[in-house]
Length: 387
Image (tube, rainbow, N blue to C red; front, side, top):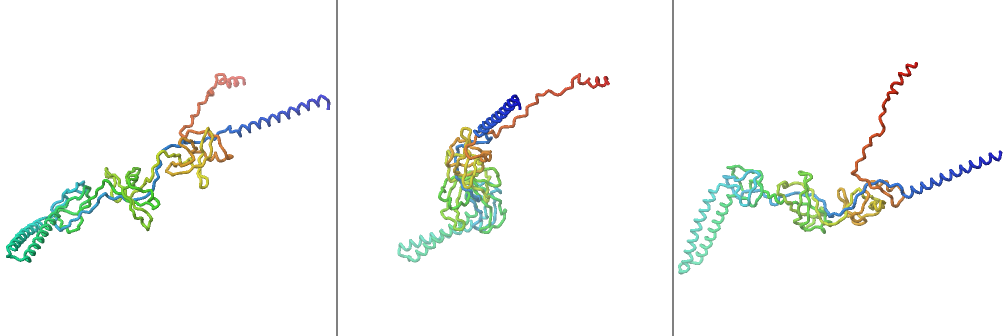
């Protein structure tokens, strides 16, 4: 090899080695930049908000009328008047049914006559004893007869009054079971009467909730008849006896029913609010990342997500109350947690996406449409002419 060829070979070798070294150096810098977090994980996030925490107990119950009875006659008699219509609202003391009272009026007149005679006999016996002409035994006998006559008159008056059947309280009557001219026996059903405002709600809760039960607590009631509507009420009474068979406590609540939407016998789902804590902290349920029996969230601070443990106070339909681990105003990841756990443990740079943002519309093409120039159009003709 000539000296000139040797120089050329050395120069080429140095060039190749230098290029390879430069490539390694550039590759090392790129890896270093990527490891330093030049790429941020896209996630969705929400802010921890303050609200009132309500500790609740779920139960089922039955609605009953505030006052509910079945009207029945106490004496026998023929119906001569019906003073109500089916489903009518009635006031306390309003006459509803009248029975034939002719017999009871005659009995009252008879009792009054017997009372008058007994009073005269008693007065006469007392006067005779005072003059020494009568016996004390006769006076005592007439005194007893007088009391019996008074009792008979009171009984006749009571029977006469019972021919007028009135509403014992204000409420709504049901469908009557009698007609004009019916002969009623004592205890025969006439009609039902229900006081519908407010309604009573009876339900049971586990004995473990007894320590947190007090009268005046709020209840929220839903019924299948009106889906989506919530009826509010308050606890009015707590039974001191625990059912040994079910280990539950009977509770009664009062539910306002001004519009008469609720009816006795309805099945109700009950939410009993036992405790209210204002300024509690809530985050979406999607932010919770369970690991075994523990709960975590990815808290975002200065664009970096850190996995932190939290304590859940109560779970609701779409949110959870947090007792410890966060503060109101903290930002937590609600979607994209899986991507944050795929890499090495530690803080991860994130980019918060707007869940309501719409994808951008495709930009129109800037290329001009391909059009045929006159020269190009005439080219085939020229070519054919040349042929």
